[in-house]
Image (cartoon, rainbow, N blue to C red; front, top):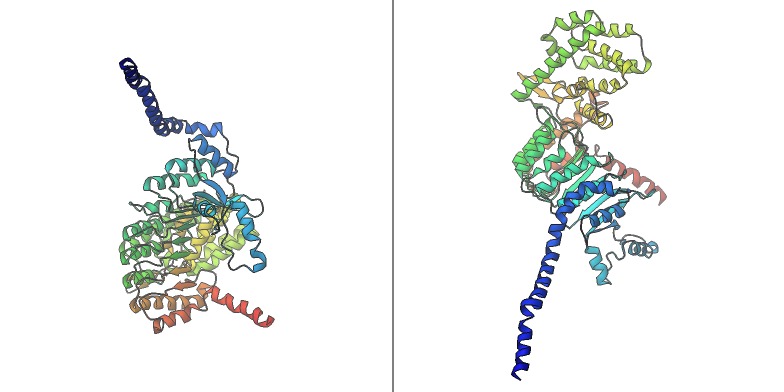
Length: 556
């Protein structure tokens, strides 16, 4: 019994250091190995990632490419690429309601149905949603919502998104972006198709608030939405500087949504400073922020004639001197008399440029017609003799000769129309020319510079005509009182008067839509009522409504 008892006693002990420990070590090591495999294996995979494009050529089918690249990167469970679900057909007539949910259920293998727990979990499972073109089913928009996008996932997207030739928009909502991953995302954008113009980063607060990097000078983004990102006055300062500074200006961004943030009076002032010299932004939303009267007054000020600061006046003089020197340097190539004309008024000609910009409208339009009809050189000489002291007509003559060599000169001549007092329109034309022709001479950007717009001198001060390119401004649900309303009333009155003048016949005339609802004033406030009455005939939506109601009334 003792031997029998000892045998079992020894036999269990022997395996413990041997088999059990070894098996325990095997299982523990196995467990550790399985836990460490993602680290130890993914590191070499990360090193081999540059070889992946050679090993796997993307087909342009996002569903296939994304799944294959995720598998090659070591992911076992990754989001699926699915079509974006349509809105719930609550407002669809009952005849079609029975069909659409069935199609959605077949496509998405379960959508928002409340009858099945499985469909609920499928709906909330992380996915990459895509909007497809109806004709060729190519990917038009990409939506990623509610799951963390890491840097390695962005690396995968940098390989499978560029082949999408029709991609127009990328939407990232609450994906846990950091300043580091934002930098990786910005590096991804130039790789995508040139059709990509819209980026939406909502619900992604960043500690350093580096959203302004999306608005760099070389950025091609036209529509940017930054709602719900906890942007404060510091972030607004960076965004305002990205819109424009004394020496740089963003020419690609058309709409900017900064709603549902924490921007106050100081931040609104920074945005207003960015609008002083920006002639590209058409649509701006600052709704649901913390802007009070001081910020509202600063925004209203830049939309009507405002006084230039000392540094802006100095920069304006420098630009005018550069412009005059460039014209004088070109004049010998056009005619022998160009030198004498250019050198007559090297300094007085600068002031003449500012004061005689309106009379230059006729030569500018004539040169445009001359481009199409190819008039003889005698017409150029006549135009030079019309204004010998302005210092601008020799340039027009040389531009006509340059246009015979390069048709791109046609873009530069219309952009000299800031002489008309409509620098905003020029900004739009110049912006479109940059989208279509990336390599232009530096001359158009200098001519289009808003500081070269015609100015008004009053009591020793220099006043610019103001930003009349901005068409839509949303300041709903802020903290503006009647004091801030007075500033916008003065702006709307000026723009309404300007739109009736002859000088506004072919250019932007200012705001078409101004939203000030849900602020700290009564809706029956007389100032607010006057603003609404002035804006009503300017609002294109309000103009379209009566037209839609007339056919409806006639049909009834």
